[in-house]
Length: 317
Image 1 (tube, helix red, strand yellow):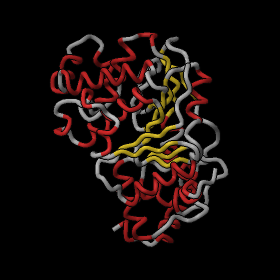
Image 2 (cartoon, helix red, strand yellow):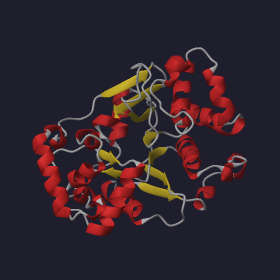
Image 3 (cartoon, helix red, strand yellow):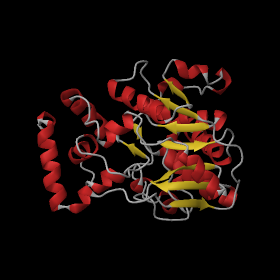
């Protein structure tokens, strides 16, 4: 089984494949391109608070998630870090705002609702618990201010077919409290999930003209309801919103793309090889990648200190 390979074997396999396929050794060359989409809406106003929000359903995060949280604290000194769970989240959501039937949702959908509620109400940055930072997250604020936008985040080129309406991701984003786009997104997502229900919301959208254009390349509109509702807001409200977005494949998924989306090459690239001089500002691990990394950390111990992962967790920038 792949997980049983010694660390030296991972390094050897990676080194051989990097020679055969140079893109697996690709180095991060420059800052990701930025796009403001789609219109001339609300300009940047109040600063995004230096506050990081995240959610882990269980009261006690697992060891891998604890690593990521410690990394945020190391990379973002002076930031308030709020990692909520199924018990503590109620301290931040008044009873009047708590949706009926919330407990019946699966934890993924609960988290999708929580992130939009918290950032729209209190402002700050949302980070999924599988994000690794290599620099302070407030580079998103600089990007937002430079674009005169009210929201900063990421879009996935792989899903985007209309450059005017990039498919917005929800695993990392930032906005001031009451930001126009994040507030509209939260209301639309709440409407879809609780007021009409996904089973009625999606068929209603499908019956409208332009459904295929709205969906673009989103593969699973039920699971990715957050993506669908973001598109709905952007297209419905026209030029009312201005977003500053970085391409995910050029930043958070840079290394996944570089190694052909193979987790068994991603692990040695990030944890067993020396880090490049210039690296992306963050790395986002997907669900399967997180599980593989957690198993490999348990087997092999700490990443190499001079690897990207090792340096990021030590607070090196």
